[in-house]
Length: 338
Image 1 (spheres, rainbow, N blue to C red):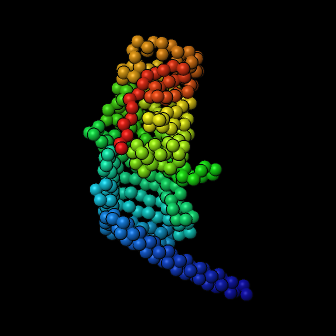
Image 2 (image 1 turned 90 degrees about the vertical axis):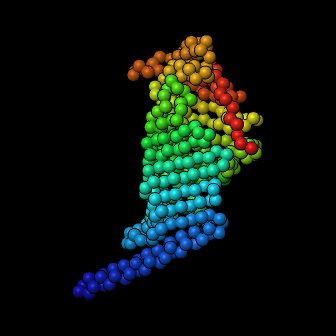
Image 3 (image 1 turned 30 degrees about the horizontal axis):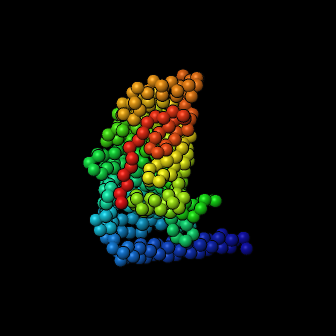
């Protein structure tokens, strides 16, 4: 019997390998059929999809689908162009898909707020839910640049990470968790010129409850607000010149569809921030001394590093901005499209 054991093991390995190879070929065929069906379905809905060199490979340890010169256009409203896209998954874990965007990427969105986003490259991951929908996704872009509407200019960054997921745990249905971080963000123009146009880091993690509006129109935003829609800010960070901010809180819309909420904030460089607000005309120059004195009193003694940290609620109500009990100024109203 012992003489036949190696032969038996070899036969079992051959059978297992053949079965796996057969499964991989079957799965690859299903991927090809799935891609073709999806493209046909989207074209039937009016999307113009064009690709070159569409292929499936990756044997034996991966299933990979890739294409070059990809164009997806929804009329003139949305156009995405990619030099190349590759998506891959382990054959035994098809619900987790990694993808790379090679070469230049371009996304143009027309409408009331026309935007154009470009990037040098990108990568990310998609996690599928049991029903085949997307449960979570991420996207990392290198050298993104966003052209803003009304000739505002170009917003650039060294890198941008985005992530989004559906409701989890005890969160209500329709809830979306999203987050993002940008590094070395260069503004086309600074709302606070004294702080300059370079933001070292800006990031946030938010949970949006209620039926998320498809577009920022007044009627959709009002319906979202009336249905209890809120933005829960689980993390907000900003490093801009001498100013550093960390905050958490909740924001919603008031009766006039203007932002209203309170954040629990930790701020360093708050005296420099007051100077910047004065220069921008948000805080009256005559009030600057009193505001600085009040904030310094709230902050207390500096820490061991000699830097004072102000911990206080940052509130926005009726477009008036308060830090603790001190009113910093009034912000301009947001005019939403109808």
